[in-house]
Amino acid sequence: MNYTETVEWMFAQLPVYQFQGASAYKVDLTNTLLLTAHLGNPEREVKTIHIAGTNGKGSVSNMLASILQESGYKTGLYTSPHLKDFRERIKINGEDISEDFVVKFIADNKSFFESSQLSFFEMTVGLAFDYFRQEKVDIAIIETGLGGRLDSTNVITPLVSVITNIGMDHMQFLGDTLTAIAGEKAGIIKAGIPAVIGEYITETKSVFLAKAKEVNAPLYFASDEVVEHYPSDLKGDYQKQNQKTVLKTIELLPENFAVNPEHIKQGLLHVSKNTGFMGRWQQIHSGPVVIADTAHNSHGLKLVMAQLVEQKFDTLRIVLGVVNDKDLPSILPLFPKDAVYYFCKPNVPRGLDVVILKEAAESFGLQGKIYNSVTEAYQTALGDSAISDFIYIGGSTFVVAEVL
Image (cartoon, rainbow, N blue to C red; front, side, top):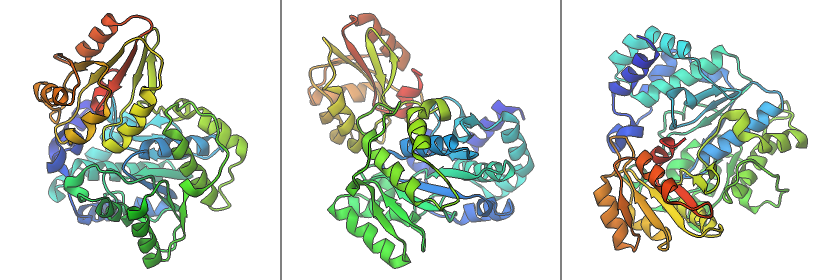
């Protein structure tokens, strides 16, 4: 199989959460442990930082990778989902894994994958660990896919465990209370390994304290720290808290990872350049200004909408599409009513029918028209806009992926 055929085969084996949602979620580490044993336990040969959380995982992961790259370390980065190409999920020093490595890894292990009925995500995690081991990275940043306790990445013993924050998302898997969700994410806290909590509220703090006490892990609350703020190329207001989380994590790395303030400064200034990170309050056009952001749950959208309404514009235009497992009553009230909406459906099987989205949006006072695709919605918004208008594109990672 060539690269395209290989990736299509991976997607076809078992449901992929990115495209199909709930049916792809597996609440068991058995397969991952079988896989890592089959590969010779590559995860044991790689130093890692483990990142979980409802929002901010990608930003924190990419900031950390950028800083460590600036410090001269060969840095692996494993994140999900991808925006344009599967290979974005696995990088070293900002370079995507090669097509040849992906093809060979699948070819070499295909019979095992089939006989063990591994999921797409399990195969991808194994691929990342094997790649980082073979390429002899100094350190790898590993982002969880969903949750923490039972996530396929949770077979590592990291240098530091990080939980960015807890919000209401993926409740069908992780529980329908913040306490339950926090309990799942706290599953990445390991015995004796320092853990950083980015943000907390009363209900979640007690969960983290209890887990840390249970496994005797030093626990740090980054939001309580007073730290210097560094300028960054990531312009979302929400990045200020993510940066606090990153700085505390860097501080807790073992002494043999030497990171000085200049490395931090340059790393935070050049995140996108160093790692290829996209889709977080990203300006993709000027005159009118167009911002794309992947925020897709109430916790993330509250912060983004607060920043959006502070912008200067004559008319605000919003290109909006979502996936079909979103809790619309929790997110649609967050969007401004004094905007023109361009409703669309992201081109994935999980995309929510645009008629359903428009009807739900209208019930919350959001007015606009239906478009056949994200591209048509965006191009129409651009054509309708004066230079002084402002266009926001969002609601789903997959909507943003189609305009980048």
